Length: 492
Picture 1 (cartoon, rainbow, N blue to C red):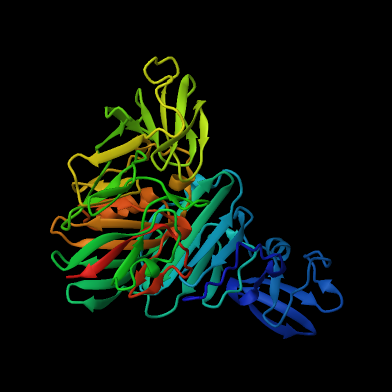
Picture 2 (picture 1 turned 180 degrees about the vertical axis):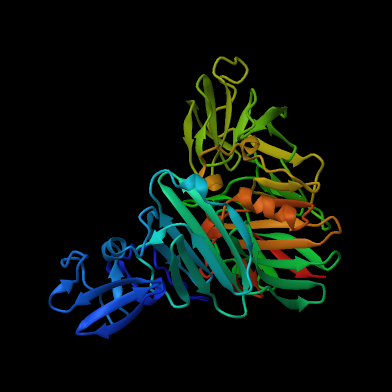
């Protein structure tokens, strides 16, 4: 793995439910065979073998270890902790780039706590008006207690970029304190005009982003791959400078889902979402205007809808359900009619289908098995290259993220799931970005690209398919996955 991430996943530190005396400002010394604890005129004693001295209950938990850790019951009975100071329990998660502290609070306390964020010089100080009864044993994390609460101070690794934030949660009541410490950005010149940049962007959490940035006029972009065949990206274009995964596909059959145009020839028909389209210069992204028609044996051409753009006649090219109730469906393979069935029909890979109203006298009986039926299509206006993915993120320098308009449902995993994202973006000046991020959502990515000055942007396939290669080497993330198509970047 490129980096080792150590997760201490919100462990409740029950075994460390005592506080060292020094953290409470208590001095400890021996006197006449007893351990004496003292602070600002407060004094109480523990006699080994007998227990706590009066006025404390002798059966209360004894001090533990060489640092004389004291249980909360002892501290409250002795008056070290004010009676009106509430208790909070600590949980934490530590990674290579962040520390999250979570205080589980008593009911009714959340509204009093602030929501803040800021930068740090390398150490973080969080103060909470609670007695933290189980301080965590983390290298670099220290605690200090007073009559009003607990100070938590964390010294982070050197040579990083530092930020922090705090926020309350209500159900159940919690207070979250995040410390972030990420590596600084780095850039590598690949060829004149094209660089590879690694960085963390703030969303407000740090989001890892790896981006190929190609200056205007320095790049050439082509779609690569073979319909029906899954390959590793370098196998599709061994000489490419950079490779980014492409659009969606059916994982079982490697059938591309959506428009795919290479050298002006459609290799796959639109599904109904945004597509990246270009002729060799700056691309554009939008839901394509696509005209499709079928030609029957008598030479007549008939306009048809396509996939998720249904019409009176609709052509289906993606495996899955074809046709609607009240229609008949003609199944076609290699431009030859196979059968006609009542809709809906499960369309298999390698076939396409034409749906028409079941009561249409022209189409009923027009075609029999073996007759020729051909499907044609063209973009309006035509382009040399296109690859459908979506959703659209940025258009004309403005946020254009509206996945529901591209037939993504509100509960679609492609939209809601926090996972690696891949995208193509560009600036108004003509610079092109191919990028992959760590786990996030496309909505968060859209807002971040807008902040970074993108003029246009579209999300490509995400999750395990999101991959960026440089000269055949995977640079992000750490696992390869064969895909059906991709985008190959070449230097001019």
